[in-house]
Image (tube, rainbow, N blue to C red):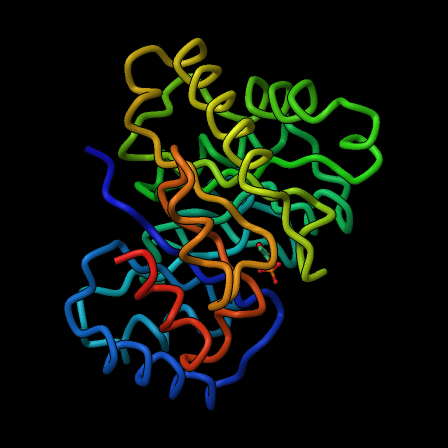
Length: 246
Ligand code: PEP
Protein backbone atom coordinates (compact mmCIF):
# COMPACT_ATOMS: atom_id res chain seq x y z
CA UNK A 1 0.00 0.00 0.00
CA UNK A 2 1.53 3.33 -1.06
CA UNK A 3 1.03 6.20 1.38
CA UNK A 4 -0.16 9.25 -0.49
CA UNK A 5 2.03 12.33 -0.61
CA UNK A 6 1.63 16.00 -1.41
CA UNK A 7 4.73 18.15 -1.85
CA UNK A 8 4.91 21.91 -2.23
CA UNK A 9 7.67 23.43 -4.36
CA UNK A 10 8.19 27.03 -3.34
CA UNK A 11 10.81 27.58 -6.05
CA UNK A 12 12.68 30.90 -5.58
CA UNK A 13 9.93 32.39 -3.42
CA UNK A 14 9.74 33.11 0.26
CA UNK A 15 11.57 34.83 3.10
CA UNK A 16 11.47 34.31 6.86
CA UNK A 17 8.02 35.95 6.92
CA UNK A 18 6.71 33.03 4.84
CA UNK A 19 7.17 30.65 7.79
CA UNK A 20 3.79 31.96 8.96
CA UNK A 21 2.20 30.10 6.02
CA UNK A 22 3.64 26.84 7.33
CA UNK A 23 2.25 27.59 10.78
CA UNK A 24 -1.19 28.18 9.25
CA UNK A 25 -0.96 25.01 7.15
CA UNK A 26 -0.03 22.81 10.08
CA UNK A 27 -2.69 24.41 12.27
CA UNK A 28 -5.21 23.25 9.66
CA UNK A 29 -3.59 19.76 9.38
CA UNK A 30 -2.15 18.85 12.79
CA UNK A 31 -2.21 15.11 11.95
CA UNK A 32 -2.40 14.81 8.16
CA UNK A 33 -3.55 11.48 6.75
CA UNK A 34 -1.01 11.83 3.93
CA UNK A 35 2.71 12.58 3.79
CA UNK A 36 3.16 16.34 3.64
CA UNK A 37 6.37 17.92 2.32
CA UNK A 38 7.40 21.53 1.68
CA UNK A 39 10.48 22.29 -0.42
CA UNK A 40 11.37 25.91 0.35
CA UNK A 41 14.40 27.78 -1.00
CA UNK A 42 17.64 26.58 0.65
CA UNK A 43 17.73 29.64 2.94
CA UNK A 44 14.53 28.49 4.65
CA UNK A 45 15.26 24.79 5.14
CA UNK A 46 16.91 25.10 8.54
CA UNK A 47 14.53 27.76 9.92
CA UNK A 48 11.53 25.77 8.70
CA UNK A 49 12.91 22.54 10.17
CA UNK A 50 13.57 24.29 13.50
CA UNK A 51 10.27 26.15 13.62
CA UNK A 52 7.99 23.37 12.46
CA UNK A 53 7.77 21.59 15.82
CA UNK A 54 5.21 19.33 14.16
CA UNK A 55 6.72 16.06 13.03
CA UNK A 56 3.95 15.61 10.48
CA UNK A 57 5.67 18.01 8.08
CA UNK A 58 8.79 16.99 6.15
CA UNK A 59 11.12 19.50 4.52
CA UNK A 60 12.79 19.10 1.13
CA UNK A 61 15.44 20.78 -0.99
CA UNK A 62 14.89 21.76 -4.62
CA UNK A 63 18.19 20.41 -6.00
CA UNK A 64 21.50 18.93 -4.83
CA UNK A 65 24.96 18.36 -6.28
CA UNK A 66 26.09 14.88 -7.30
CA UNK A 67 29.22 15.16 -5.12
CA UNK A 68 29.18 14.98 -1.32
CA UNK A 69 31.50 18.02 -0.92
CA UNK A 70 34.12 19.99 -2.84
CA UNK A 71 34.87 23.00 -5.01
CA UNK A 72 31.38 23.71 -6.40
CA UNK A 73 30.63 27.35 -5.65
CA UNK A 74 26.96 28.07 -5.18
CA UNK A 75 25.90 24.42 -5.09
CA UNK A 76 24.53 22.45 -2.18
CA UNK A 77 25.27 18.83 -1.27
CA UNK A 78 22.65 16.28 -0.32
CA UNK A 79 24.39 15.75 3.04
CA UNK A 80 24.09 19.50 3.69
CA UNK A 81 20.37 19.39 2.97
CA UNK A 82 20.06 16.50 5.36
CA UNK A 83 22.17 18.35 7.95
CA UNK A 84 19.84 21.36 7.67
CA UNK A 85 16.79 19.22 8.38
CA UNK A 86 15.60 18.06 4.96
CA UNK A 87 14.28 14.57 4.30
CA UNK A 88 13.46 14.97 0.60
CA UNK A 89 14.97 16.64 -2.46
CA UNK A 90 13.36 17.50 -5.82
CA UNK A 91 15.63 16.51 -8.72
CA UNK A 92 15.36 17.15 -12.45
CA UNK A 93 12.63 19.77 -12.25
CA UNK A 94 12.02 21.14 -15.75
CA UNK A 95 13.19 24.59 -14.60
CA UNK A 96 16.54 23.04 -13.61
CA UNK A 97 16.71 21.16 -16.91
CA UNK A 98 15.98 24.38 -18.84
CA UNK A 99 17.80 27.00 -16.75
CA UNK A 100 20.86 24.89 -15.94
CA UNK A 101 20.96 22.38 -18.79
CA UNK A 102 20.67 19.40 -16.47
CA UNK A 103 20.79 16.02 -18.20
CA UNK A 104 19.19 12.74 -17.20
CA UNK A 105 22.63 11.34 -16.41
CA UNK A 106 23.38 14.24 -14.02
CA UNK A 107 19.98 13.81 -12.40
CA UNK A 108 20.73 10.11 -11.89
CA UNK A 109 24.05 10.98 -10.20
CA UNK A 110 22.26 13.53 -8.00
CA UNK A 111 19.68 10.91 -7.03
CA UNK A 112 22.50 8.56 -6.02
CA UNK A 113 23.96 11.36 -3.86
CA UNK A 114 20.53 11.94 -2.31
CA UNK A 115 20.23 8.25 -1.50
CA UNK A 116 23.72 8.16 0.04
CA UNK A 117 22.66 11.02 2.30
CA UNK A 118 19.43 9.30 3.30
CA UNK A 119 17.16 11.67 1.39
CA UNK A 120 14.10 10.68 -0.61
CA UNK A 121 14.63 11.80 -4.22
CA UNK A 122 11.58 13.24 -6.00
CA UNK A 123 12.64 12.77 -9.62
CA UNK A 124 10.69 14.83 -12.19
CA UNK A 125 9.93 13.74 -15.74
CA UNK A 126 7.70 15.36 -18.36
CA UNK A 127 7.29 16.24 -22.00
CA UNK A 128 7.23 19.63 -23.71
CA UNK A 129 4.17 20.74 -25.67
CA UNK A 130 6.00 20.12 -28.92
CA UNK A 131 6.81 16.56 -27.84
CA UNK A 132 3.18 15.92 -26.85
CA UNK A 133 1.87 17.31 -30.12
CA UNK A 134 4.37 15.13 -31.93
CA UNK A 135 2.99 12.02 -30.20
CA UNK A 136 6.27 11.46 -28.36
CA UNK A 137 5.12 11.78 -24.73
CA UNK A 138 5.62 8.15 -23.68
CA UNK A 139 8.92 7.87 -25.55
CA UNK A 140 10.23 11.03 -23.81
CA UNK A 141 9.13 10.22 -20.26
CA UNK A 142 10.19 6.58 -20.70
CA UNK A 143 13.69 7.63 -21.66
CA UNK A 144 13.86 10.15 -18.80
CA UNK A 145 12.77 7.46 -16.36
CA UNK A 146 15.24 4.86 -17.65
CA UNK A 147 18.20 7.22 -17.51
CA UNK A 148 17.49 9.35 -14.42
CA UNK A 149 16.31 6.71 -11.93
CA UNK A 150 19.32 4.97 -10.32
CA UNK A 151 19.64 1.21 -9.92
CA UNK A 152 19.18 1.36 -6.15
CA UNK A 153 15.80 3.12 -6.31
CA UNK A 154 13.12 1.72 -4.00
CA UNK A 155 9.69 2.75 -2.82
CA UNK A 156 11.31 4.17 0.32
CA UNK A 157 13.99 6.34 -1.28
CA UNK A 158 12.40 7.48 -4.56
CA UNK A 159 9.26 9.27 -5.73
CA UNK A 160 8.52 10.07 -9.39
CA UNK A 161 6.69 13.27 -10.36
CA UNK A 162 5.10 13.40 -13.80
CA UNK A 163 5.16 17.10 -14.68
CA UNK A 164 4.28 18.00 -18.28
CA UNK A 165 6.46 21.06 -18.98
CA UNK A 166 3.56 22.84 -20.70
CA UNK A 167 1.36 22.44 -17.60
CA UNK A 168 3.80 24.00 -15.10
CA UNK A 169 2.66 27.43 -14.01
CA UNK A 170 0.38 27.84 -17.04
CA UNK A 171 -3.05 26.93 -15.65
CA UNK A 172 -3.24 24.16 -18.28
CA UNK A 173 -3.53 20.50 -17.31
CA UNK A 174 -3.71 17.28 -19.32
CA UNK A 175 -7.12 15.61 -19.25
CA UNK A 176 -7.71 12.68 -16.90
CA UNK A 177 -7.15 10.06 -19.63
CA UNK A 178 -3.82 11.61 -20.58
CA UNK A 179 -2.62 11.62 -16.95
CA UNK A 180 -3.86 8.04 -16.46
CA UNK A 181 -2.06 6.87 -19.61
CA UNK A 182 1.29 8.34 -18.53
CA UNK A 183 1.03 7.12 -14.93
CA UNK A 184 0.16 3.56 -16.01
CA UNK A 185 3.06 3.65 -18.45
CA UNK A 186 5.47 4.92 -15.78
CA UNK A 187 4.33 2.24 -13.32
CA UNK A 188 5.07 -0.53 -15.86
CA UNK A 189 8.34 0.99 -16.92
CA UNK A 190 9.46 1.35 -13.29
CA UNK A 191 8.79 -2.32 -12.71
CA UNK A 192 10.86 -3.17 -15.77
CA UNK A 193 13.67 -0.98 -14.42
CA UNK A 194 13.73 -1.83 -10.69
CA UNK A 195 11.61 -4.96 -10.44
CA UNK A 196 9.07 -5.49 -7.67
CA UNK A 197 10.11 -2.22 -5.95
CA UNK A 198 8.51 -0.41 -8.88
CA UNK A 199 5.10 -1.18 -7.40
CA UNK A 200 6.02 0.71 -4.20
CA UNK A 201 7.32 3.95 -5.74
CA UNK A 202 4.84 6.80 -5.42
CA UNK A 203 3.85 8.59 -8.63
CA UNK A 204 2.89 12.25 -8.25
CA UNK A 205 1.22 14.43 -10.83
CA UNK A 206 2.47 18.03 -11.08
CA UNK A 207 1.45 21.00 -13.21
CA UNK A 208 -1.18 23.62 -12.32
CA UNK A 209 -2.73 21.60 -9.48
CA UNK A 210 -5.08 23.91 -7.58
CA UNK A 211 -7.98 23.60 -5.15
CA UNK A 212 -10.51 23.47 -8.00
CA UNK A 213 -8.96 20.50 -9.86
CA UNK A 214 -7.20 18.55 -7.08
CA UNK A 215 -10.00 16.09 -6.26
CA UNK A 216 -10.47 15.17 -9.93
CA UNK A 217 -6.73 14.60 -10.40
CA UNK A 218 -6.41 12.54 -7.19
CA UNK A 219 -9.21 10.21 -8.39
CA UNK A 220 -7.13 9.13 -11.41
CA UNK A 221 -5.70 5.59 -11.08
CA UNK A 222 -2.02 5.44 -10.14
CA UNK A 223 -1.91 9.09 -9.01
CA UNK A 224 -0.48 8.86 -5.49
CA UNK A 225 -0.43 12.60 -4.84
CA UNK A 226 0.87 15.85 -6.28
CA UNK A 227 3.86 18.12 -6.62
CA UNK A 228 2.43 21.62 -6.34
CA UNK A 229 4.15 24.87 -7.27
CA UNK A 230 2.26 28.17 -7.17
CA UNK A 231 -0.65 26.87 -5.09
CA UNK A 232 1.69 25.69 -2.31
CA UNK A 233 2.84 29.19 -1.36
CA UNK A 234 -0.22 30.14 0.63
CA UNK A 235 -1.85 27.91 3.23
CA UNK A 236 -5.26 29.08 2.00
CA UNK A 237 -4.58 27.45 -1.39
CA UNK A 238 -2.47 24.49 -0.28
CA UNK A 239 -4.72 23.32 2.54
CA UNK A 240 -7.72 22.43 0.30
CA UNK A 241 -5.36 20.44 -1.95
CA UNK A 242 -4.09 18.48 1.05
CA UNK A 243 -7.69 17.96 2.16
CA UNK A 244 -8.63 16.64 -1.29
CA UNK A 245 -5.94 13.95 -1.00
CA UNK A 246 -6.91 12.90 2.56
C1 PEP B 1 6.12 22.79 -10.20
O1 PEP B 1 6.86 23.75 -10.36
O2 PEP B 1 6.60 21.72 -9.83
C2 PEP B 1 4.70 22.97 -10.47
C3 PEP B 1 3.97 21.90 -10.58
O3 PEP B 1 4.24 24.26 -10.59
P1 PEP B 1 2.73 24.74 -10.69
O4 PEP B 1 1.92 23.94 -9.69
O5 PEP B 1 2.77 26.19 -10.35
O6 PEP B 1 2.27 24.48 -12.08
